[in-house]
Image 1 (cartoon, rainbow, N blue to C red):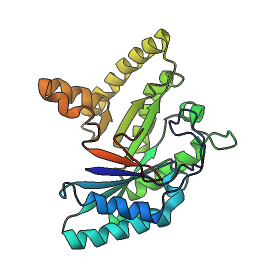
Image 2 (cartoon, helix red, strand yellow):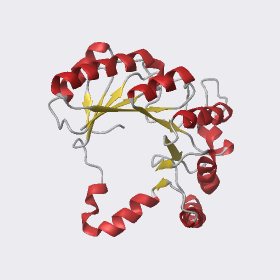
Image 3 (cartoon, rainbow, N blue to C red):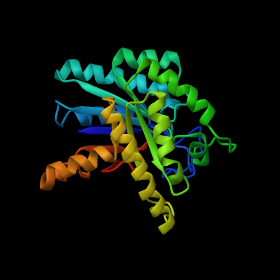
Length: 260
């Protein structure tokens, strides 16, 4: 079982497709964190994941560290390991935190929407400025410490025309693991769908080229589609298992079966 801790609703960005827009500022307390970790010990001890989420979780770096210290205490008591992940927009990444992350096995996933025009379409600061130039530098810093860090892209109707170029950019930056999620809440027209089909054809050529060059990489949704085709009727294992594989914990301690 994986536990996603929504440490805060605060964020230093204002992405306009965010499913958790800024309203009231809520922060998770240490008490809620510790109760969650206590609760986690009643599940499968072989594969227990703690995922730090937000808002922007790196606004709560000290709480992340306290959480992991508490998990380490549980590891000694129950003799099973936790593993840790954090999903960040990257703006607050620095060498000190990356060194700490590597020292305790905290894996970092970074949100990036691709080329500058695509990224700056939605991923903006509080005052409306694009964040691409900052994120472009932070990618280099992240991959210096974690070469197999994941990139997380959100594809919107407005950005679909940049899909191929954005995927190329992300892999050329050095990412080897890319997960793309469509913004299903966006206004997708027939024209956007046609463009999506066209982009997938371009991406299939890129995918084939990278395979023939024997590059090590992962690109969802292609990998998931290939896997489901191979597994056939057994592909149900690739579907969402609502509340069965992960539980999301809101800042006030409420439990949900889905991150969104």
